[in-house]
Structure formats: structure tokens, C-alpha cells
Length: 483
Ligand code: SF4
Ligand code: SF4
Image 1: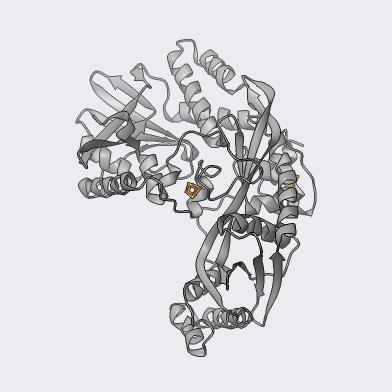
Image 2: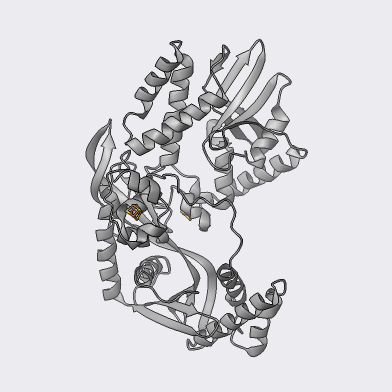
């Protein structure tokens, strides 16, 4: 068996495949869904181990595990708990819930490494085993590597299931045809990780990473270091904008992870998204972007679009390029460039069910459309296919703060918003010198006081503000029920 330092869960290897630094030490970042999963799991274990009548064992399990939550989260947990009891009713099997895993091993550079896949529960009946994963996500399917390990290691007397609570289903876990290929691929990921553990690769996966306050991508601005005693909250650009209008809306997204009422399983790609994607493909590392012939190449990229969409996209691109040519020596190096920063302020936390004083770090993160330099000056470009809005100003400040740290530039940062329509393009240019950067720092430090005041486990602690924005709020029904 691999040494514990050389053993990685399938989810850790998945993280490695995105960014090596994301496999780090435990932090105190808000992970409400995981906290709720953990307490639900404890309730299920209490219930199964309690021989009292059903009603009593359910009541005791709920009291022991859900009581510190606010009424909304209690309701979510009770609902998930009841779903589990329906799809996997109590039966007289031998029950085990500790360390149920399957591990596959391989030697890398003379050392044994292992990848493990886990189950929450094992039920045994006369030498026959049922191993059950507990999933509360919308998509409960195991990853390919989990399936590959299970395919390799399945015994004849074992059955594997996923208790998919959102789907009210006990799903069979299917085996796959090419487990060796998949396993080799994942050990290659470990090999590359072992070779360079410090390789940082930011991307949209930063949204789900708990190392953001330490990895250097979102630098600490008002303190030098952070430790595990600091509670952490990550606020994306979208939620930063919402925070200005209503704290509850942002808090329910980032601190409490309440289920959104507008959950959409599949959305087709909009013309706006296509415009961003094609423009990014054209502009990054393209020194000749302003030449007519080069602009015409945009049509080749959009060849699979219908005629009307193609024309609309091309017109927008021409207007965009015309605006960019105002900047001499512009070089665009990145698309989807991740930027942000972290502020630590005094706030509130929870210890043994009591509210206590605690430092709180807020990580503000955003993804700009394009980034590069005009001469030596960093430039961040945001493409909009809608008219200018007030909220664009705070987005610009966030980018400027992030860029001033990560692009190592204190003197000046340019942030452009380019508003593109089929008929023209407008530019809003903001230049951030040292004094603008200082006032942006003060502003974000003050904003960080809001997440710092939210009490973990109490989704009703953040303030709410009713306004026009409630019409499009992803929590409007839940919110009005709890006002
Ligand atoms: S926040 Fe992003 S860049 Fe930093 S460690 Fe995580 S995934 Fe990597
Ligand atoms: S419905 Fe309105 S008040 Fe309630 S969380 Fe949403 S934005 Fe805030």
C-alpha cells in the first residue's frame, strides 16, 4: 500500500490536473455544501445505528446533527435526510462507515503512489457487500477515474451504488471498458505533479479552489500572511456586484451555498458568448490584428455559424478592432485572465455553537476577457455586448487591484471596457495610478467587512435589501418566505 503522503483521492488528482498548487493544506474557506454533506452523513450514521423506532431515531439524528443550523439549512438537511431514508430504507445488514475505499497503485520514480476512491457506507449481508456513495450534487455521476478503479478492483460479491439524493435515486455504478488506459492517464498527472508541485495554473477552476488566499494569484493586500484560524470567503466578480445591492443574495451564494431557484441544466451558447470566444481567439498573440486581411480571417473562425450570426459577429469584431488601434504598441497576451486580491478584517466566526470574534479573509476574484500591455503598462480589457452600467466601475477597480500586484506594476494600470454593438463600439478607459490604487484598496477593505459579519451556519444573519433587483434574484421565493 502506498505511504499516506503518496496517496491521493480521485478528487485530489482531478485538482492536480487543473493546477498543482491547488492540492494544498486544509484552509477555513466557507464550503457550506461540504459542511452540510458532513452533517447529513453523521445523521445517516446515527439513524442507522439507532435501534429505536423510526420516528425516534430520525428525531434524535436530526437533533444531534442539524440543530446549530438556521431554519433554511435545517429544512434542506431534513429533506436530503428523508430522501436518503426513502431510497435506502433501514435493513438488518452489518453496517460500516469508516475508511471504505479502493486503492490502485503504481510505481513512479522508485516510489509507490496510490489513487483512492471512497464510499460513504458499506452494508454486508451473508458475505454480500453493497458499497454506497452519498451524493447531494445535481450531477452525481462518478468521475472516469473512480469508475476505472472500481472496474479493476471489483470483487464478485460486491455491488456499487450512488445514493443520488437530488435525483431521488439509488443508481448502479457502471463499469467501463478501458480502465487501464484511464488509470495510466491519471498516474501521468501525479507524475507531472511530483515533478513540479509549485506549478500554478489559474483558470475557471480557481472558483472552486480553497488555496486562493495562499497561492499568490489573489495576493493578500492588507496583511502579510494568513493561517487556519482565519475564516475565509470567496466573492466572485458577479457576487461582488450583487453585494452592493443586497448582502443576503451574495451571502447565500458564497457563504451558505443555498440551492438557486434558477438552476439551469443546459444552456445553448449565446451570440454574446460566441463573440467573446472568437474575439479572444483572434486577438491573443496576434501582432497583426489591425490589418484588413487579418480582420477578414475572423470569418474563417465563424464559418460554421449561420449567415445572420456570422455577419453580426463580424461587424462587432470590426468595431472592436477599430477601438483597439487607438492604443499604440498594444500586445494582447492572455484571454480569460484571472485577477483578484484578498483582504483580512476583524469579523465573526463560530466555535462550539457560539458566535466568536474571528479574523475573516475575503478573496475577491474575477476573470477579465483580455490582458496584455501597452508598451510597459498593463492593460486589462473587458468586452461588453450591453450598454455601460454603474457596476462596471467596481469591476475595473477589482482588475486594477489584482493587476497591480500580479503584473508587478505600481505606476499605472489601464482598464478598458469596450461596449460593442452591431452598429458601433464605445470605450470607457480608466487609468489607475498609485492614488487610485490606494482608494480602491480602502474601498475593498471596507467591502470586506460585510462577509466578515456573516455568521457561519446562520444564513439569516446577513442583511437583506429589497429593490428592483429582487425580480431577477435566484433566491426570490426562499427569501420572501424568510423575511
Ligand atoms: S486559486 Fe487558482 S491558481 Fe491558485 S492554487 Fe487554486 S487553482 Fe491554482
Ligand atoms: S429577493 Fe431581494 S432581498 Fe431577497 S435575497 Fe434576493 S435580492 Fe435580496
